[in-house]
Image (cartoon, rainbow over all chains, first blue to last red; front, side):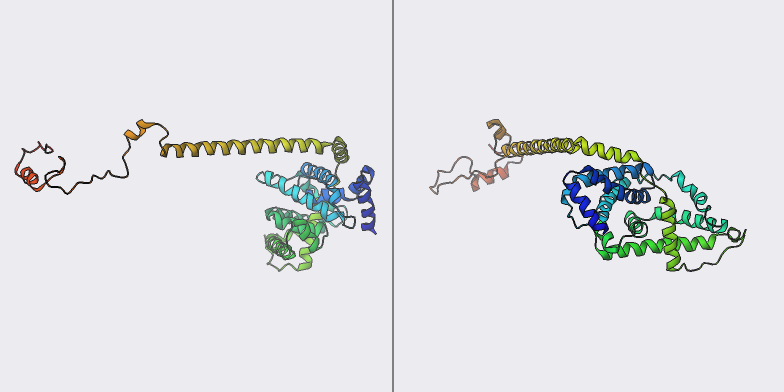
Amino acid sequence: MAESADAALISQAQSGDVAAFEALYKKYSTMVFRTAYAILRDRYAAEEVTQECFVRAYRGLARVQACDSLGPWLHRIAVNLSYNWWRQTHRYRLLPLDSLTVLEHSARTESPQAALYRAEVNDALAQALDTLGFDQKVALILFYLGGFSLEEIAYILDCPVGTVKSRLHYGRSKLRRTLEQMQRTLPEVAYEF
Amino acid sequence: MMWRRARRVSDDELDWAIRSTLRAETEGLEPSPQVWARVRARIADGRPDQERQARAVLWHARLANAIQGAVLAMLVLGFGLGLSRGFLGPDWHQTTAHSVPTVTYVSKSAGRYPKDVLNAKRLMQIDKQKPAPGAWRLPQ
């Protein structure tokens, strides 16, 4: 149903209907923006990537077949743009200030203990994600945040499915070690108020 | 301070932790409305033409550089080949050595040797002449 709605919008946008393209933008921009943000951890960069992604999508819309789902295609553009951005700026590692507000967000709905544990896990894993290579990190983001299948991730990253599995495996192994190390070094007092 | 023993994190825990981390980082994030405004402006702007023109200029510049490089390479190559063929003129040859020695054929007729051909008698005369040390001379 969603794909047929996409197909109609795509064919309208291909004929120059900007309103149809705006509908596609509204449908996918948040997803693309969040993926770019998760990769780059920079709001400005994520907005630039989103903007460029949709401009290029509009120009390349003629190449899209009506039956295609637009999500993986848009993410492929966004990941390539994010890679370009990351390659230019990864030497200057900037930590966004809003990563410090995780505890405040989560504390609204959870008990203080659970919120604290969750915040510590999130913080440790976010740092561990930053230490992963670009390919492993993007594979994890697309799988866990984007909810894409292995085949879709393989299309987005332009690599075989086996490579995607390998990247997910090694990325998960590294994050698992981080979690286990965190549990080993976390003081008891953190769990028992 | 007490420390926890290391425990293997299960797959479910790991999945939960990764998903939770990524969602916490991006929860509630939306691109600002200016992003769509900029996208629409660029679409309506006809920027593809400008970019195409810029790309064409870039390609022309690259092509011009390539042609210049090729011409320069041909000039250098031509100059190098010209040196070996002596296009600098006859003076150049005066300082160069011939790679093929000149061969003088001597006729077999007796008593008609060229002056510069040494015979046994002449060699013996040379051997008898013992010049003083430091005064070596070629025989006349």
